[in-house]
Image (cartoon, rainbow, N blue to C red; front, side, top):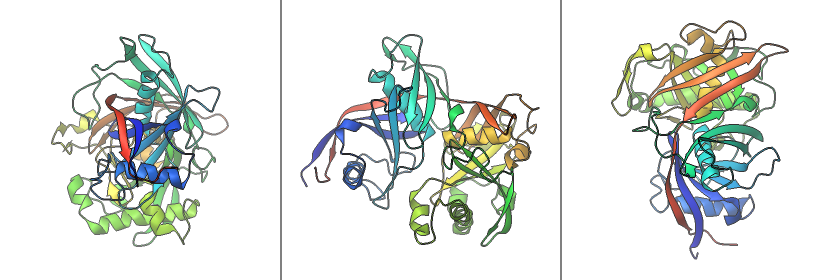
Length: 387
């Protein structure tokens, strides 16, 4: 069990934090690579005390980076959600927050030219095969470290990195934005009965439901809803029904899959309201168009997924979805873009969204602003067996 030094960076991307590792530092994808990463993070352990993990789902993440394997991209980015309680890594979804860190990494490591004032970076998201376009502010030959852009859930301000998820419609099931063909569907959910949901495959596999339909107090704090076991069981029951319906899990592996995989992610929606963030900062309901919480793997998020925000924004411009019903002002006129301001436990975030209606729904724009910062660059030590 000799220690293995691994060159890596720790980058705060959006409201998440991850360990970014060059692909050449690791074995090929498989059990040995996973063992090394798990040991680097100190998993499985709720505290991750013997590794670099942050003991929270927002900070127990890895990004495997390398030269592009897609000719129209500048860099490969392979996202892994490192489990804290099980010796498992989920490689089947994407993290939009760490995507902003991947864009910064590409400029920092020279995969993209640091030309002022902006570097345009094309990122191959290996998990889904899609192409993410990013614009990174550049100063003094590298990623800009200062700026005036603020995101909910992160103190201070930073340089605004723009992420365009236009290419990510249908990225999980490859069946388009609405995999059922409908803006709303009814599912039989144990403990809840017949429940109306909107299923939108956009950047990740998004499931939208009204807070009032699932017995969730729209005004309760994050701590209160997370402490309510009955609420957690109802949320997981919805995820399980959807996962089985769309082949994201089987009955044999359902329980473990629900504790490991991010998809499907559940988004519980309510109308805008005044509230305080998890850090106690006041948010006025008039400054938002929607209040939403995201939930997966038995936990409500302290912030809001970037991929989920694009799914939410795109759903808000599709007539008939639960999101378009709940969002302030309803869906825009056909073909018109809108900015959606989402209130969430960590603060607020805005997404520019536009679709066209010709031959079905096509995403024309799905742009969200994030910030990112390089926190550490050096050697991480893994205790997993080396090859």
